[in-house]
Length: 337
Image (cartoon, rainbow, N blue to C red; front, side, top):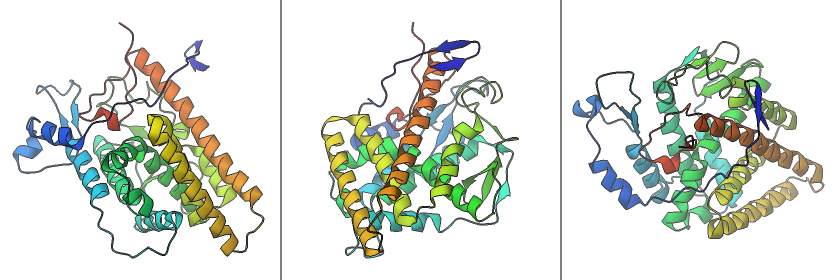
């Protein structure tokens, strides 16, 4: 049940049943893409906003083909430097997360507006980072390419948001940002009370008009940040939380054999966590595990509320999203004709 204006609307919505697009098809599409101003100058961004006319009031075609190709190459042909064969899969993923977060700056500046270029940067950083992170696991590296790409499709955005939630919890615990701030990148943060976002490539409504859908504390999972600060997971525990959330979503997204393998993978990571606890003299860890699982359930609950809101926006035709690779993005359904 969602409150929209003066009305309460209840929806029973099926999520995560997108089709799978092959890498060969992505390569074919790339060759058919129209030129942008940047590409005509020899600049090839991973994400391009292409307008059909000179009018800036048109909604752009968001070409993410190069980004998707780059991420797929990262996951199919990983460039691993450190030897991790004696590590468990959970430890390997924890090391990958630690390496990604090692570039985080402690002295960050506050930005009042998240620009369209910031959104583009988030897409690029998030998708490529999760491709590299997945490749840290021996088990995932041995998956067939189709399953690797399915994982990439379904979890890259969630992983990116969870990673920033975890980083914000860490920065708040160190008093490097306050309780109303969120660390959006390695060198910047936003304040919930005075932030704005350029969403002109997604809707013809302003950020203020779309507050129902983009409430900052909901958008950035503030409730989850406080929960992580209370539990204070170590690097392995944090990786376990992020992994089981992502792989649960991936399994639900595709179902069938993918879901079965994701359940097996979660079992492997649970065994790895048990080994981590026993090696660190935490033989009685049932309460700790309940705290971690509570974080997972709370995230899924908050995420489903957001998806229901976005679905409402789609039914009222409030979003105008046109991605070259929609299978990598959650696009709200359009209103019934």
